[in-house]
Image (cartoon, rainbow, N blue to C red; front, side):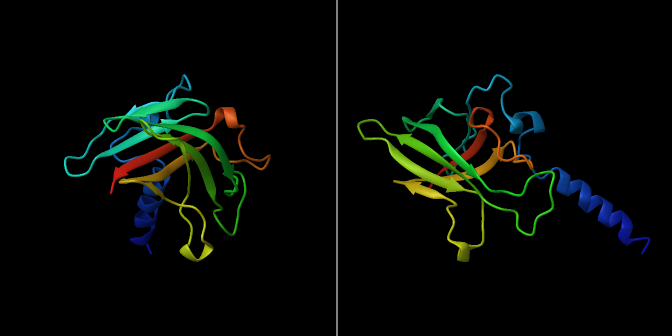
Length: 159
């Protein structure tokens, strides 16, 4: 028992850091203080990837693809931070993807859920895949956050 307790403490501490994105500090993962959208221009040498943070109504230009992405709407039925739930819940964001010379395309992506539930998770457009990494702030018992305070972190990958 005396050997298990330190192991459990270490596991609990590691779990507390679960909301950070690999390679980013907690402040970077939380997003800009000004509410401006930002692009993390990390590009993998074998796979074009970007992580963007979106706030409502602002368009983010994606490099080098010439596309832009905008957060249009969200739904959030995740378990409130101040409650205990049987299921973690699910959140989705609706994005507008604009490409040069093409009409805007609507994409719906969400938090991961069991496949049997058939809830939105990733979306693809052309050779690009979009994944929701985080949606902040989490809901409380009073309900989901107002749209103006929402920040969505999205991963864009070349398939």
